Length: 161
Image (cartoon, rainbow, N blue to C red; front, side):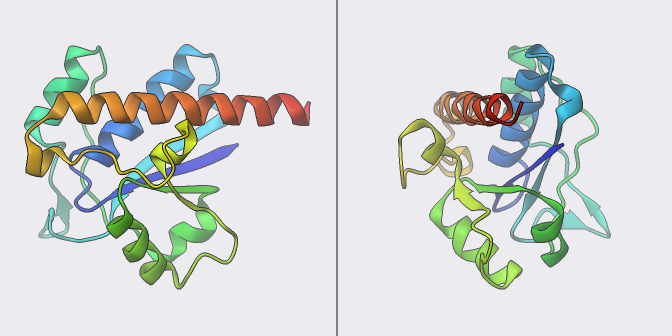
């Protein structure tokens, strides 16, 4: 089983969009049983009284417009244990990567990457709609990155057969 954790600052916009887009893609590809996909935050800003906030309404709306329901998702903060639990720790921007390395104590196994690295946009960041308000640009980035990631992982699964 391939385990993927998508990570952004608050876990209410970009990383849950990536989580649910990727879940949808693997389901449509008939590979849902081969994957475990979640998302998390590098901060605890969206966690109150032990509960995480739901997906931010405009991000939720964009997912629903595309037939993807993120109901039940609550923000959570990544922990050092996630480093051992997941095969891929995928950040949305370079600040996420810095915070992930701090939380995990580095990246000795080379599990940390940016989502857009998978589609040849090395070093580029997923547009942050929290600041831009442009959820369409974020959707485009996330779907492009997830599609390329899935293609790469499928190739690796074929190679192992």
